[in-house]
Length: 84
Image (cartoon, rainbow, N blue to C red; front, side):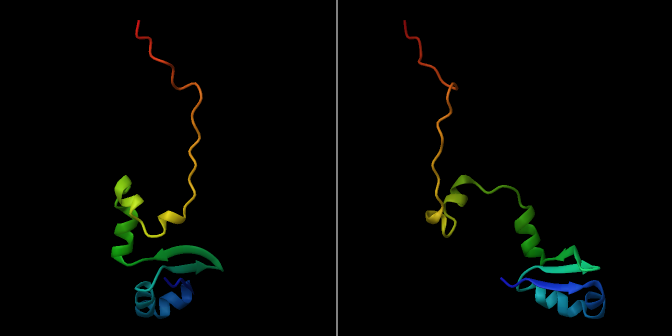
């Protein structure tokens, strides 16, 4: 994924070029050198706003096997059952 940065002036002069660049990744549009807007394809926007994925989708993500995860046992949140 390529990230493109354009000034507001560059964006105004070549909106078509910005749209083409958005096919390859986000396009940051700056005002006075500071990021002000981001241009995305509708598909990328929908991925970002589609809501949380299921745990099954998250576990199937590429590269997930490289993530280190060591859960900490919560103390005091459980107690032995009284079966008397």
